[in-house]
Image 1 (cartoon, rainbow, N blue to C red):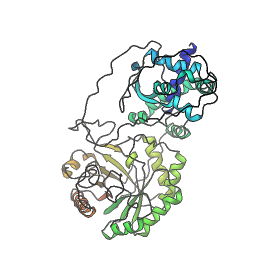
Image 2: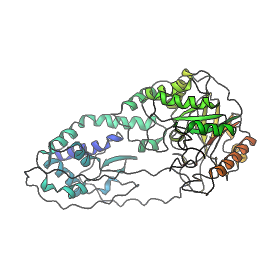
Image 3: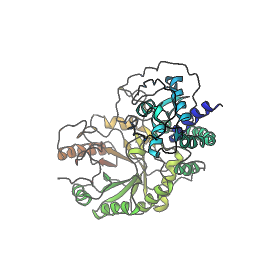
Image 4: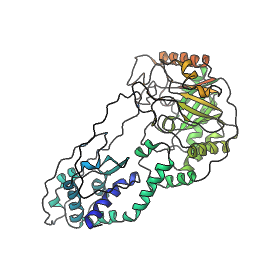
Length: 480
């Protein structure tokens, strides 16, 4: 490979580290029209893929300059939220970056300034993979001016990029492993932490390489569970738990996302128990596809084990780990279940069956081709029925049809209320008390249809804003 080709390859490799994917750019790339995307009405609320917008910092100019030929800089259209094929980039745009890399020195550039040159990225599609690659830094060049940059400023960037050449085979191999190993291919596109430099991912791939553990022992799920979800903070937890206990709720779900300490989690679990309620836990995370479920295994299991000893049950899928956002691999799901059971051999384990938009149930106004998608371990105590948690569903018919395979399994029904986001983006204008009455009506309907218990969300499911009706964390704001 010549120097120019090597430089381009190295730059694109540097930008691809976030996903572990290698992109090479041919020197003469044909111009193709981007394919028109089919417009589809979304029937669920998966957030669009956010492309970061970077503010270009002013680069300190050294006292001396070099003769660098001026270059006419083409404008680049930013397709926010879309897919930009590599063919969009012209040879002229590639030459601009090459000229910068070959002519500009960087000893005197700060890490932030270096980052500007290598992290202005967009999503492109190459060989079927959506990956990050370098967006030609036209805006940077126009802002700084090539003629004002010194020859010594390039060497730090070149050194940083050249060292990546030896990692290219590893990056390529990782992408092949992820594509062959991970069931949810959408997750690979969104999770930027899936790289050869992520120790947590390395630990998970080691777990994936081992045979599945033996199935857990079956522990029966008790009838009459009336759970409120979810608890993440302690500010108003005691009084709000008392509010729900007085209204007949006997359990509360504490969710964990890895930002807590073991003492934080135990404090929440003990608040639930002090209210005379059974504590349940779930490994969750925010409802964002970009948030990685592949946190350090040792951190996850440390938190789950600490809490599980004092809990009645563990729900395998919640928010980010729900089938709505990820089809958990058996190796992932079963590993966490095993760790929870090691801490508490009597704890109930509840899986999830979800009807709604997933990576397999593609957005369609008529829900064409949709089926219930599951995150379920072997020998689970019961199943949580999700996706029909609002008014407007024929509950009995859905349980007999879409969820028929779970007819003989103890079922907990997820309950949300009148409609998704009833107090925020889809507001009905009703009070907290009025919405709670609707939830309680839905609870009774699921019980009449054969479910043995319910899991009711405290807020409106959006987990946004700053009110007791919109935020799902029941410890955050006081119930008036």
